[in-house]
Length: 356
Image (tube, rainbow, N blue to C red):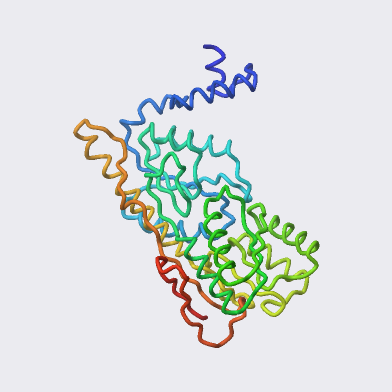
């Protein structure tokens, strides 16, 4: 028992192997080594946590604005924790954060990352609801709420627009599969390239601007030429790509067209203005917060009657927000009118395109 106590409290005198074994067993049992946690289910909780995965991505700024706007009337406190500082995901940091959130009597969690199954299970043990935004729940928790983008359909629209320009050589600079949006974005572009007879090269980078710069630089050095179009998987990678283009004197869109995912407020102010997929992250944040608030409030009613406080998840708690492709000059469009692009799959709703 002495070794167990020291391991659970982070004290010395326990080997790392023994500590890991004890902590793993404790997590499987749902044990939280904090006296405050003993009062967790009876405590009044008024704080919501948002788990992000690299706050360097401006996507999260708009999303947080939507969350704050939705929760302002409730007077709840919103705290933010990042499990991918500088774009590097840290699974141990995720574990520590989940434990701290439980210890602090958190009311609910909005997660931008697909949490580890054991952490999702741990939150469930303590009746803490989770809403996933722009990411998928783990396979073991498919009924959990989520507010996402139809990334596959959106990528089909991006591809259709590239095909209008008759680009044949596409390069996708994309982040690791730790971020679940990677899969549908890549899949949609692969299918679109196949449909339109283009060649798509997928280049994986760590999820930050500097890594994107280095990864793209090394690839282009090996290739010896620029692609027709570079597609940046998110804002940090877009920033790295733009810096490399500037350093090499590549003129966009004359030397290489550039398209990215995730609209941001100053994207129309750079030269040239950027063609980006607008995921409406503020709307995603607003819907996620409203969904979480509804679930938390639903927990209070049976608790007052002495019933279960377990969160109730309904099919309508899984939502998709439509995206829009904002067409500007970085893709090669000028002052001409751009027609609405429709994916070949009729089951996929069209995505609005505007020229600015």
